[in-house]
Image 1 (cartoon, rainbow, N blue to C red):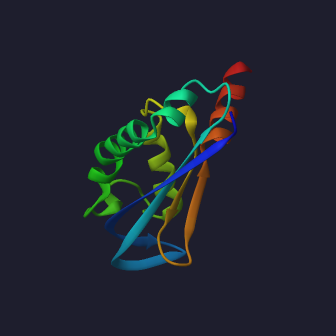
Image 2 (cartoon, rainbow, N blue to C red; image 1 turned 135 degrees about the horizontal axis):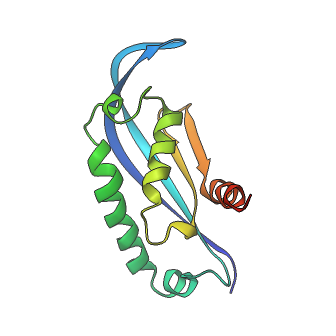
Image 3 (tube, one colour; image 1 turned 120 degrees about the vertical axis):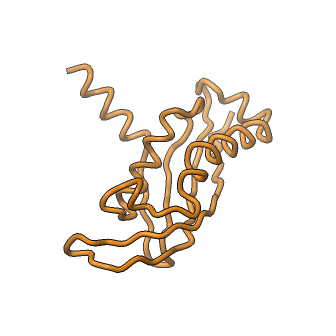
Length: 137
């Protein structure tokens, strides 16, 4: 079986203000875009499910994101969730929510687009590998 990547994009609107130096800005809003990239390769635990039943997998991903991420962010003040409410901190918070996802190991990375020029990406495989290595020592 060949390696396959699946990217799904989600959108939400939220407001935030930045009151700490060097990012001082008054309350303002954005339409955020969150991309979730999943990889399916031979030997992966749920590879057959993702390849043979992509609609079911996408439905599970959609349900998870709706409940654990989008419902908590859409229309909200991000300063009530992360502080300071920067894109960097928000993508880390989102990645922490993904640890509850049944197919967490298949999620390669998350990319949060705040504006046309600002994107924040976190590689989940690297973060998981580092944590595993730390726990062995």
